[in-house]
Length: 364
Image (spheres, rainbow, N blue to C red):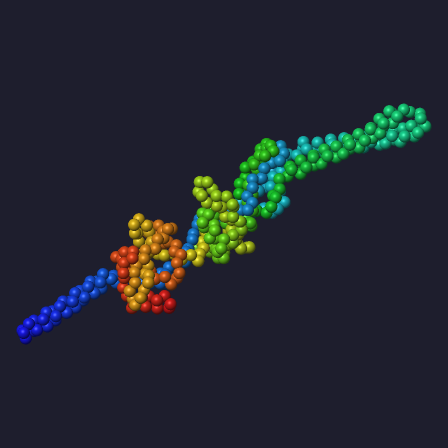
């Protein structure tokens, strides 16, 4: 009987040991399944989004000056590269035909004035005679019409004189504004007609920046206070002046014009880049991985006493090997070490010491 009791106690003891061993093995197995990772707050690993697009300096006025009358070029006063002031003479055309036309019109005006004087005298005489009943009404009406015709003829002759004078003024080609001659098309002795190109004049004291941006960047740039034009290692503060509300069918971009500070001298045609920094956070490509054909970032969620689970967050705008925009709270924890080992939903164990060092470093 004593032997049987001893056997029962021994069996119970073995059962307890077996149970403890099994429980320990299970706990060890669960502990082994946890992946040790390092996390970093989103704020500590992201950068502000920097944008850069090609741009060019353009003149607000760079027209081709053409002839408005027909004439032979007698003398040119400027060459390519010359700076000119508003109203300065550029070219003189042979103006003798228009001078003669004006003299002829002046002579015709004198004749018209003489005819008007005669018509007035006849009308006064006929008005007196018709009161006496000496002449019929028809003769009086003709005298009155002759006076009105003479008046109209004088106005016509004045218009002809003004037209001739306008042609004479156009014989001297003058600069419409101050600028620089960039091209000369006319030669001395050349016969030109109306619309013949003569010079190209650039207004070099009024320039601005021209660029073509995507509609997405257009929306972003309107909210940015600091814009810069960068060229030859020089930076210039610029502002948005105008945005063309038209998307190019080929490039799918919109043209934007940006003004430069007063007094800034930039050569027309100078190329550079428009640069600005937005408030959008950019995640470096080191933290971006691919899962099920999508690009995203692995986050640490539901952390309790250093244990949580991994969650894959899809970045729709991400491209392979490039930084991507991310719209999450800056305190979001990103798995920054062993992120390629963990799977979406898998339990993880946080390296608390490493995480504290990361937070401390970002605060400093």
